Length: 432
Image (cartoon, rainbow, N blue to C red):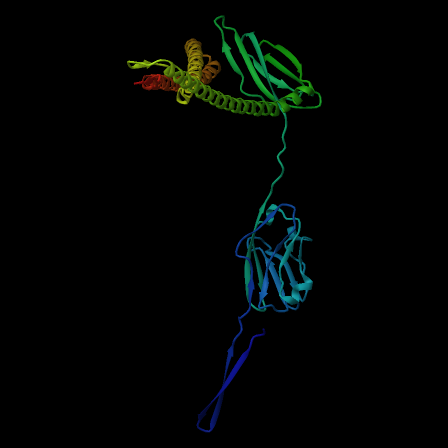
């Protein structure tokens, strides 16, 4: 819809002159540019569209359309006049912008941006100078790729009997230095050093790796070459799936055993109930025969235990309780063994820590600064290990106390159940 102009004339009489005043009212400004309020999300390398439409729909083929980036200089991304793209835009957008020429007459003034880059992220302004209307489109750019999984193998190198303290290096088959973890150094009572280093390697062309231990001041170098077979990486990759398969098989076996146990228990219960019924009928029949042959002058009381269904269920429950109790006792023994092992390891770590403190004091007296720094680091590591072991031991002792309380509670419940168990029923008969 085009702007409508209305006019109204007013006549004013000033003596011999008449003044004609024309009042013009413009109803323009009814058009606007419609853009999405939410940001347009794009991935690096793809083609996207920054939507913009004239509303109401108006032929924009002969209009000037400016797409700009306010944060760039020059700010022009794409400029089109009379349906023709103009030059002089920002160089980073050269050859990557275009408009929908066939749809301009329908009011589609959207911008197509090809091969999106990370630098394209930002606000885009669509402006029509002739109509003085505009809108802003926000573009967000992201990048993603599929994860690349590599099989790795951990190698550890140990060397003893060094003085002064040596350095440890890892090399690949081409002699390139590998990035390894921090070298661990321990000084023994004979003042000789033991060093160890660990490195994680990936599958390579040669799969050959060298551990080099060297002492620069004495010019001593020792090397060991190790070759990791290709099959070892394959075994490592399949170990996780094998573990999952074994775990699933174990779960299935446990379920099958529980189901079979349930059916066996049901069968034993039904059979026991049937045997009790038959025994009761036989007993009643024999008593009837004896009452016909002789006359009983007094009261005759016969006590016979009846194996009722409740007794059978109670026995099954007792068996299950016994199994649970045995399992709990086994867990208790295992937990005690683990606790004793942790305590032994704690004592060992504390002894090593004490030894490190003593070595630190000796090295402080010798003013060996570098060795002192290494010992401080080792002491901090050992203190951390000791603290972790103490926390693990505390947690295991708490679990042990909880397990002992559970066992005592189960024993009390079992004792109460045994006391409250009904005694064998008796059958009394009076014949007059």
